[in-house]
Image (cartoon, rainbow, N blue to C red; front, side, top):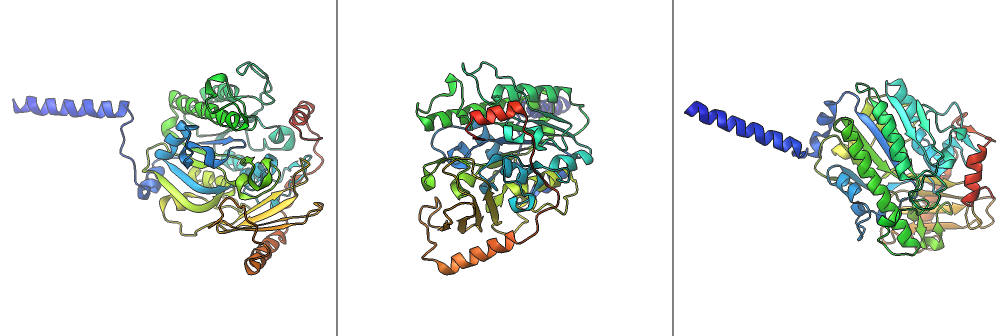
Length: 444
């Protein structure tokens, strides 16, 4: 009888464990165990998702009042959210060049529409490929087309051109569904036993594009932008489900970010690529791990520049000496105590009539920016982000000592020699990509 009871208890426990597994019941790991849990994985799969033109503060995990991004919120609830993450430019080409090479704009030198990455550029994809990763990308931003050299290190760098009819009108760039379809083909064809790095770039928020079912936020400009965020978030849920479907989710780390934000009147600007002040540089950064983690919110200022070394750190791959960012893992585990990481940002030759050729430096408390030649308005700006996080009040005339300190730090940064042969000049732009860029108001 006792044996029967023990067997019944064991059976009940086994059923409970099975039920727990079926519903993904799992004790969230404390951040102190993150390193040990990651060590259980031999080269985890890595997914980098960039949603173009996405400002952090209009997403759900960053406290936005409307439910624009429930899937991203779920990732943050079981992973890591960086509260203050900054891009290195408000123009995609300059920003993503920094993200993929972990070089400051002053180091990679890309600043003109005809610039691209040279063969001497070392991308995170190249390092991961050398470390045994299969490397894939589905790209949708014309400034990152193969003709500009951003394909370096990728085994497959797909740039689908077809339009599709999801919206009832054509989009300039491939939409969410097309990115998902291409990602699905890559994942289903991937050899199961080999680690992969997958980079997905979504352009729908840049185009304020969404099907009717997601248009719940009003009919104005702002409402269209919010609807596009909701549509892309739905795409995130489908990507996550596909990773699970192919048996990869429980071995995959996902990093979610954006190349730059979008202004809706801040600093007198609308859109992006007009300046490099915080409202267009503050972008989301969320990490989802193969296991549930007690939610971690990192308050220190970090940069997109730190994403590439973090990916390599996760893969156990060597971080090139040329990389100017630092891995984020010590900040996640609580071992890092380096405080706010300074951010340098730049905007090159004007893409719009109301754009400034501008440089900026943020140390986490102060933002200093200045317009430079050939910009006729050589203005300087200084903002105290502790009391003015939206950077509305220019203190350049009132805080002379802080201005002098920040000015000297920026000048010292700019005095360094740029990396050799990273910038390729006078790139011949693919004719179809050029046509679409002109349709968006570029290259005029």
